[in-house]
Image 1 (cartoon, one colour):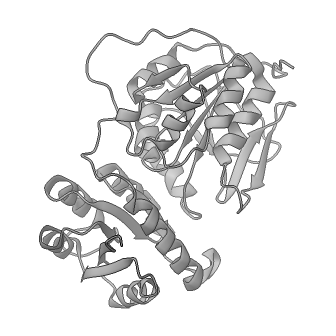
Image 2 (cartoon, rainbow, N blue to C red):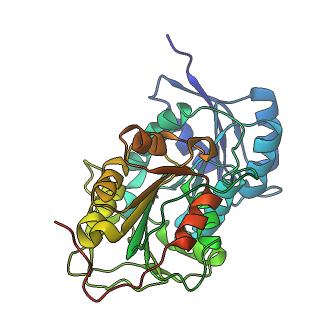
Length: 346
């Protein structure tokens, strides 16, 4: 029998701690090793308990969740799940940059309430427990010769990411010029309520304007587009964007985006699959490559979780495997103004 997943809960609200404990009680494979009411106490208990996973709020006295994430990952590395309100979304993404793996929202009537939250919490803990606990990998490559890349022109470029994606996206976008001659589309797996915080956080890192897509909007060169909360985004052959709710049965927002780019732009489509669990983006990236477009994957050794890039590499979808700085170099080298009518190769 496998050992139970040992977790440490940290929140400055005793009510929240009691609720978390009650919601996790039915899960026989999860054991609560301890609770903390601030980041400093969480750090102390992490040293002694060596939990498999730690949940952290971001706003706590003495030491907030951002500093606690930094200190824990430096002194006693553990898988960290940030549980916060949507109002603290920007702080939550800073915690991801500091070393946390995932972020999920506290329960509200708008996101399904306590029962739905409990189911999601148990599922997320089980998924995160399977992530290898290794030192945080650098998302840029060590000095060396630049990769030899096939040049080309793109009319739109799609980025797909999940676990570990926000810091990688922030780094990548920070390295792109404000005069980028094509639009960038992002499919980042993120909890409902956190898109606005992700947009703010990426805007602080990037010289490019970040917009939330709407159905009927025409993408503009030099802009970055995110789908609204709970939605996926596609580009139609007419050149307009289509925004639809994500199917609860499929969670393949990355594949939906990349397949649409392959159809709309043909051999002037571009795409990349970044860090994350699962395989989202692999079939969409393959469609771009088969259309003659440019297809990259983040190098697995630079990923927080390499599952998604490895899936893209296994099925032959990616022509190059690059760390984030190498990918930024490739995107800077691409050129080609957005045409009035998107190119399509049948």
